[in-house]
Each structure stands twice: as structure tokens, then as C-alpha cells.
Figure 1 (cartoon, rainbow, N blue to C red):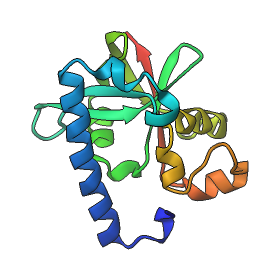
Figure 2 (cartoon, rainbow, N blue to C red; figure 1 turned 180 degrees about the vertical axis):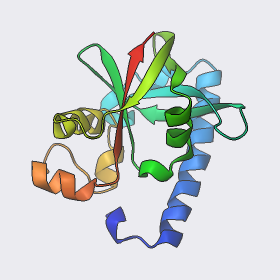
Figure 3 (cartoon, rainbow, N blue to C red; figure 1 turned 60 degrees about the vertical axis):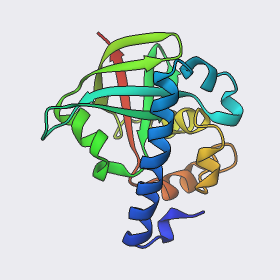
Length: 163
């Protein structure tokens, strides 16, 4: 599925589907199944839940995302780019909680999308998503660097440093 070819209506429908799926993931995490979900990363991906503050409402929000650990920090991507509400929330209020398979930590979020390591970081995180990236036509195992950049121009890369 190449989302670069999607209309804005199709992208909104896809975002709505993700919202429903995310609700299921949060429920599983609340039921204590977070560690279980991460047991088979090649099939399910590696998931964590970001606890962040709504930029307008000030309310606590939860967002499940795929992640990767790189050089002691945790990284994720905002595949829908800067239009993602959770991304805008953590850019306004970068101190977040992260529910990881081994427990919850406090962290500070930083957008590192312009890093000279963009391709390397993006590949690691997309590999951490299990089959999800391939489903969207972004296979980090087979795409060349230029193909990966071409297919992910709006992706934002976020680094979380433990505080």
C-alpha cells in the first residue's frame, strides 16, 4: 500500500482506522499485556505507550507507537508527520511518560528528523515496527536509502531521553 498516492479523504480514513487500533493497543496495555505484545517483535513490532499532555485540553493522552532503542535512547516515528495530534502535543509539552515492556520511565522528546543520521534512525525504528512498515510499502530491509527517503518525506523521528 503506497500512501503517497492516497487522497486526503483516504488518509483521514486511514488515520481513523489507526485510532481504533490504538484504542485496542491501549486497552491491552492497561490489562497488563504490554510485555506480552512485545514478545514477538518480528510479528507484532515493538510497542510502547506515550503518556503526553494535550496541547489544547491539558488532559492526559495515551498513544501507542512502535519504537527502537538506539545508543541508549528510545526513538519512534510519526508516520503521518506533523499533522499527528500526539506529535504536536509532545512538541509543545516534551516531558512525557513512556510505558515500555519493562516498566514506565519519564523522558524528554526531541524531534531529530533533520539529523545527519536520519536514514539510519528511520531504518531502525521501521524495523522495530514489525510488519507494519512493509504493509505501507516502506520495507526498511529492501529499500535503498534514496527510495526510503522518497517514501517517507513527512515522517518525523522523535528521540526520547530518560530524565
